[in-house]
Image (tube, rainbow, N blue to C red; front, side):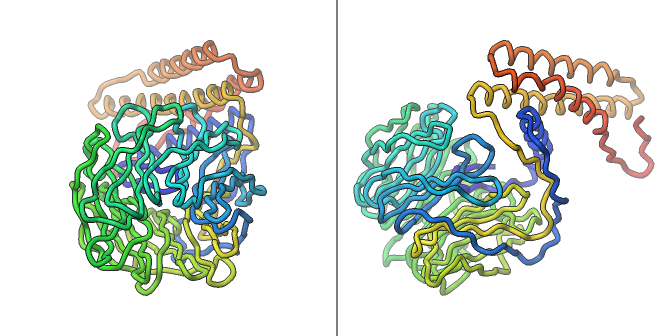
Length: 515
C-alpha cells in the first residue's frame, strides 16, 4: 500500500491481505492498553450492490474552501479535517468526534489564496504538520503540529510563480521529507529539499518539456525501483490534457518517463491508485471543463495505457479511491464541479467502472472542490467529505452500504508522548507474539506432515517469554504513567486466552487432523 496523508492511497492488493489480521491485533492491543471500551456494531458484509450514504451534514469553514485533507492531528484515534480557504486566506482545523461529526473550526493564517493542503510529519517529531500552497503569494506555508490539534504560525517558503499543488516525499532518500510543487505558469516543477526540522531549501527546477498549465501532482514508485516518481496533470499543445510521468533518480532529480495524452482539454486533479489490482500504480485524472474522468492503467515501467474516459460532459474537480461497497475492489468518489453533486463509481477490479451514482452535497451549483474518502465514524465503511465552496462549508456523507463492521472504538488514547510510545510499543509486541506463535504452529504442522515431532508448546512458551522480555525492556526505557503500565498483566492474560482460541482449521479432504 502506498499511503498519502491527504487520503489518497493505493488500495491493498492480494499481497497485502496477509497483513490484515496483524493490523487488527495491533489495533486491539492499542485500545486495550489505553483502558478502552469495545463497541460491537454488527458484522461486515460485501453484499450491497448499490452505494448508499446518509444525508449530508455540513460544517462551516472559511471563505471559498478549495482543498482539504484528513488525518488524526491530536492523537485521539479520531480523524480530523484541515481545509484550505482561498478567499479568506486561512486554514480551518476541524477536530473529529469519531462518529462522523466535527467540532467548530479553529483557523490558521495562510498566504494569499491557498489552493492545496497536505499533511505529513515534516520535522520528524511524531506529530503531523501541514503544507499549504498559496497561489498568489507564490509560496508554501508550513504549519508545525503540536500533537494536540494545534499548529504553529505558518512559515512561508518560496516556490516560484502560482503554485497549485504539492506532494510530500523523500525524493533524495536522505530520510527527510521533501516537497514537490507544481505551478500553473511555467514549464517546471519546484523541488524543495527538507532539512527534517520543518524548513525547506530554495526550489530546484525540474523540466516538464512542453507541458504547461500544471494543476496537480501525486507521488508513488511508478516503475517499482525503490525511488519515488511523480505524476503531473498538465496541458500540452492545443490545450490538450496530459499526464506527465517523471521518474525519480533517488537523488532528488527526475527524468521524463512519458507524456500521456488523455483526449480532453486540461486536467484538474490526478492521483495514483492501483485500480486493476495488478500491483502497478495507475492514474486517475479529473478534467477541468467537460471531459469527465480519465483512467490510465500503468505498465509498471514508465508508461500509461490508453485512456478510458468516464462521466463525459461533467467537470471532475477531484478524485479519491476507496472500497465503498465492501467487495474488495477499488471504487472512485469524485467531486463534480459546477454542480451540487459528488459521484461514486463502482469498480470491477479490472480498471473499469461500469456504474456510477450521484449524491447531493447540499444547495445548488455548489461546485465541490477537493474530496477525501475515509472512515470518519469508525464503522468499517469509507465515507466521503468535500468542500462545498459556494456555501463556505465542508459536506460529509456517511456510508450506509451493508452492515457496519465490528470495530474496536477507543474511549480515549493517552495524549502524553511517553504514554503513546509505550502504548504503541506494547501493541507491536502483541502483534509480534501472534506472529511468533502462529509460526510455531506452522512449523509443527510441517513436521507432522513428514512424520516428525515438534515441541509446539515449548516454541510458544519461548515466544511468550520473548514477549515478556520485550515489554520489560520497553518499560525500563520509558517511565510511563501508572495508568498506562498497570494493565499490562491483564493484557498479557487476555492475549494468552485469545491465542489459545486461535486455532485455524484449513484442510482438504483426507488430510490428517492436527490435534
